[in-house]
Image 1 (cartoon, rainbow, N blue to C red):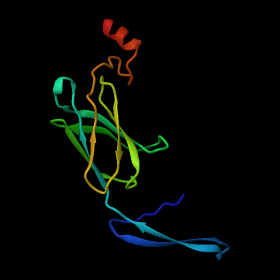
Image 2 (image 1 turned 90 degrees about the vertical axis):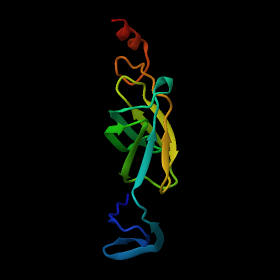
Image 3 (image 1 turned 180 degrees about the vertical axis):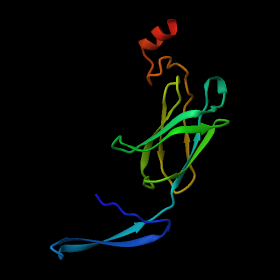
Image 4 (image 1 turned 90 degrees about the horizontal axis):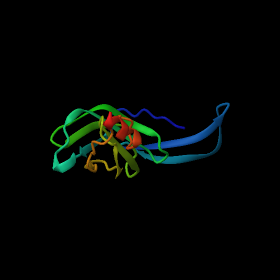
Length: 149
C-alpha cells in the first residue's frame, strides 16, 4: 500500500517508483503518471412518501467501495427541501463506482450507485419509507410487533 500526501495543488504529478534494498535499486524503475484532482462534492436528492421532500438534520450518509468497505461517512447530514450537499470528500477515485447509503431514523435505508466524476456528482435516492418502527435498519416481523405494542 502506498500513501501520498499531496497538499492542495491539483495537477499531473510524474511519479517514479522503484524497489530498493540496502539503498541499492533492484529491478526496473516504473514511471507512474499520477493526477491529483480536487476533493469531490456529492449532491443528494431524497423524497418521502406522497411526493413530500425529505427534511431534517438526522440523516446518516455512507459511501462503500467495490470491496464493501466504508470509505466515507457523515453521521449528521442536513437535508432541506429534499436536497443536501457534501463538500470536500476525499479518497474517492474518479471514474470508480461506489454504493451510497442514506439512513434516517425510523425509515428504511435507501441505497444508490454512483460513478464519481470530478464535478456534477448527483445521487438520487428512492422514496424513504417510514416502516422501520424498531429502528434496526430493516423491515421485519419485529417491526410489526413493535407497532402493535
